[in-house]
Length: 169
Image: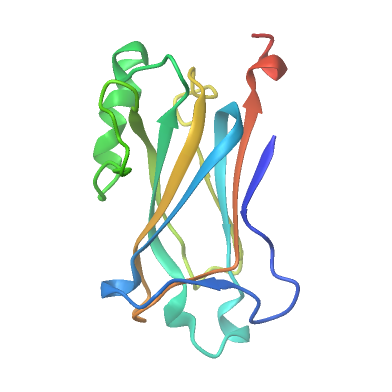
């Protein structure tokens, strides 16, 4: 299952940009139609030599996941509960957040390297040797810092994972 959080660009300059904020921070939240076991986050940006202003590119990125219905932090492996230290941003807060119903876990943090020749960069969640042993039904991608602009532009953001039926659940 592939979830396109931001559609890929068709032409140079096609992107989604945040409103101006301190250090270009932005949050992009999505709730999924089906719960998935998350596999990887993929960020793609226009190549640095092809842009007029590379400072709008994301630099440091956190990804938070909302545990699927019926799951709580106490029911997921300890290593994933401790993983929240990887995120520098706070746990997402939703206006209708009910502590007993909504649980968030940090899937990880990545640094998008604008100087890399690889414009498609990935954060693999299988870092503990397997696909996370829990399902999520939402995610928040947070750019905590960009390359210097007052706003951040995203060209392509993709969250990949497997539905439970693909794992034989």
